[in-house]
Length: 397
Image (cartoon, rainbow, N blue to C red; front, side, top):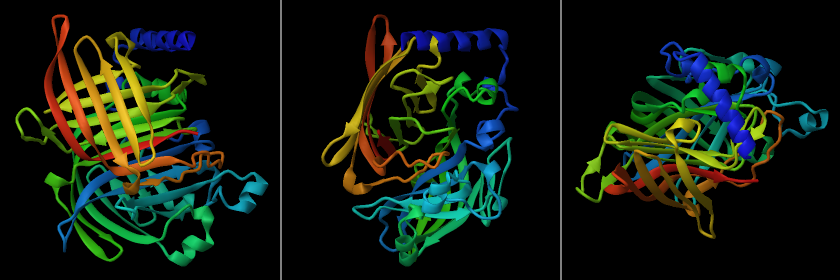
């Protein structure tokens, strides 16, 4: 593994030295755009994920929701969706090819994921920004409009849908306050080379949504100040294993007792593969503390970042215990999410393989963040934060 890390570091350094003004932070290179060119068009996926919290209009109960716009193997498709889990397609070795709207919610033993599939002919997306159209469903940097519906009869008759029964529609305005780019790992060159198995970009690390969601006939109001919203995207040739994600935008300071409206945590990672070689189990942490960004990013090797990661599944909960430090700052993260408020997410990879049978996903993660800054030889505690209503994911196969 050490040899692989040295090789990757050498490639990154060479790219940095040869192209000091390269696409890593170039304004004309937008990582939130459509990425499936070349061989990824026949063996690749791209998705735009949105999660937020809404208020039940009748009861005022807060409930988290998610909406995802997804496409896989577009060059293999046409007017009708090709479903990889359909037995006939499996027997013929057909790879999946479709656009999909995946939407749903989490709750106390009431979590659902609803999938609607479309042919590639009903899909389009811009390369320079998020402007996705799947039939009558649209996603731009400033708005989301769409709906999903699967009846109980359809869900029972079509296991290849990998879907629960339910109905949901949304009409939302979007205001992205904070973003995060992982850096050279998603630069234009590395994307063109398909260097990584799974890429990640966070255009809306802290996003304020507003509008309405109708879920199974009940109306939910989405308010900017309590939406605690998030938007990121993944693309690549397969999914990382293990799979680690944690986001929280709802923090209260133990030091001042105040709600921190400009503070955001995001953790993503697993076992990254670069040019087919494993870098071991790693995570990237982005932390905005009242608008100031502190990152712990192993791919930026010159920052001398270290980390300790312990994530997993217990009898009744999933947990994320993570510590990271560099010469500037340190962070300790301890979050959990009850299984009763999570669900096992269903995806098939571009080969049509459903490798993940236990990919836990939730919207009720809660816990603490201890944030430190380096002073002299010591790290001094700046704040202890209590977080709740966070998005989370963990799986391994």
